[in-house]
Length: 89
Image 1 (cartoon, rainbow, N blue to C red):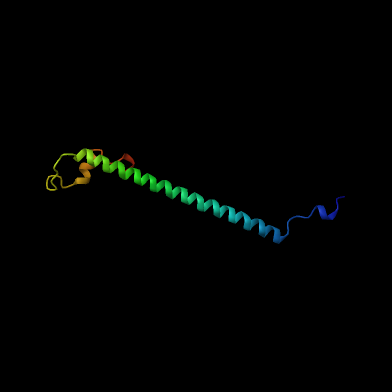
Image 2: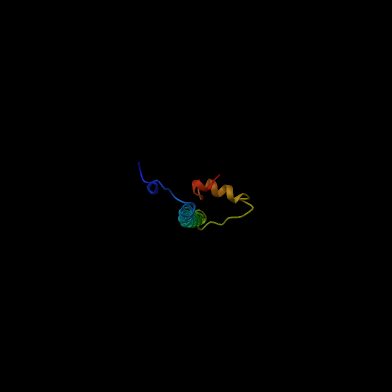
């Protein structure tokens, strides 16, 4: 038969400390992950904006555009493939 003290498990205080440590670790991972995701989204938006600006410049370079001629400039830009495919819904 085993001695009684070797069968003993965690008491409530030890379990609370372990759960608190796990919570702090998960919270830290959450903060880092959200920052990385937000930075990636901001970088992607900046790259897409630069792509759109460059495409507009190449489409309209040396060209006079009258608003009366192209009343729907967005539709014209989509047809001219100015926007990246993942931006068009």
